[in-house]
Each structure stands twice: as C-alpha cells, then as structure tokens.
Amino acid sequence: MSNNIRLLVGLANPGAEYARTRHNAGAWVVEELARIHNVSLREEAKYFGQTGRIQTNGQDLRLLIPSTYMNLSGKSVAALAKFFQIKPEEIMVAHDELDLPPGVAKFKKGGGHGGHNGLRDIISKMGNNKDFYRLRIGIGHPGDKNKVAGFVLGKAPAKEQENIDAAVDEAVRCMDILLKDGLNKAQNRLHSFKAV
Image 1: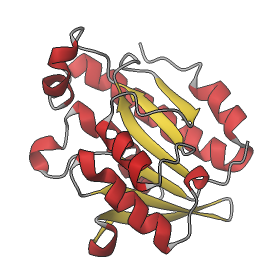
Image 2 (image 1 turned 135 degrees about the vertical axis):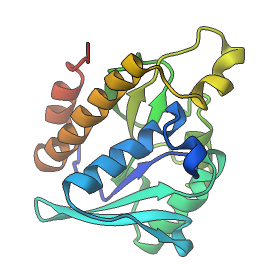
Image 3 (image 1 turned 45 degrees about the vertical axis):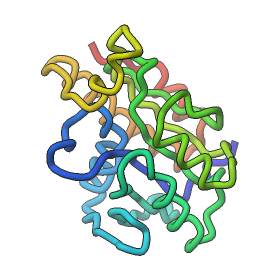
Image 4 (image 1 turned 120 degrees about the horizontal axis):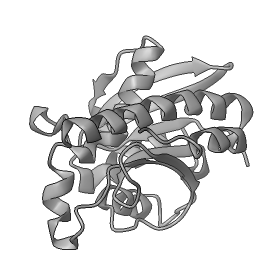
C-alpha cells in the first residue's frame, strides 16, 4: 500500500456551537496535527475550508477542514483536490465513527459511506470514487438509530471525551508513522490502541 497521502481532511460542522460535538472528531485530528507542526489553518474561500500545509519526511501534506456543513464536505475536498491534482487514493479523510467505541481509532482504505453524510458527499463529488483512506475516530453509538442525529451533534460526557481525545492523539502519532513507514506499520500500532 502506498503511503503517498497528500491530503488529510478532517470532517466537521462549522461554527462555535459545533466545535466540541462528536461529529467534529475528524477535525480534531487535523487541528492537533497542525498544532504539533506549528502550522496555522487559514480560511481559504476557493477551497471552502480551512487549510494548511505541513512537511514531514520531505513530503508535503495538505490539511483541510471543510467550512461547508458536513453534508456538503465533498464540495470543499473536490475543489482542493482538483486544484492540486490530488487523486482520491492520495486522500485520507478523518471522521467520527458510530461503529467504534470512544477511545478507539482505525485506518481503513476505501469502502462505502456507512450512512455518514460527509463521506457520502465526498464519494459523490469525487465521481463515486471510494478509494480514499479513512481515519475512523470512535464516538460510540446511542443504541437507537433514531437517536443518531442528536447524538453526533451532542457533546460527549467528560470521560468519553477524554477517551476520544486520547484516540485522536494516538491517531496523530500514527499519521506520522504512516507518512514515514507506510500504512501497515501505522495500522499495527493504531489498531492495538484502546484508551481506558
């Protein structure tokens, strides 16, 4: 598997009222990576999002947090990817994942959208290409599909948030491993991690 990831996208809803809601877990990965690399994310109207760029192992990695609402994330991703000629298989999308418990994060290549509106829109705007990588940040499930919308737009209780933050922190470290040593090494480390 190639470790030639050129764009890391963190999915979120814009605005202060959503900042710490579970649905924004993907953006926390990008914000933390930017912080560690001492890079400021700037609002860029032509990419409909906040962007930045880090250098790691002589490789450029573009960072993007779409400022569109979640269900229009693809508009932002497609605009930046088209401008820099970044192929879907060179993109990693970090997003909240209902099917994983808080404190767990996993890398994945390709696949469907699993009902996630951000992923659904990215797949559609990338010409139905699903070959991008995903970084799935576990947020747990409310136990009833009718409660999902309120759950993802709500804030996690303190202990759950602590576990999510620990998984985000570990995912950021593994992102560095991925860019240096490839996906398998990064997966082996990230997939054995569980915040307690």
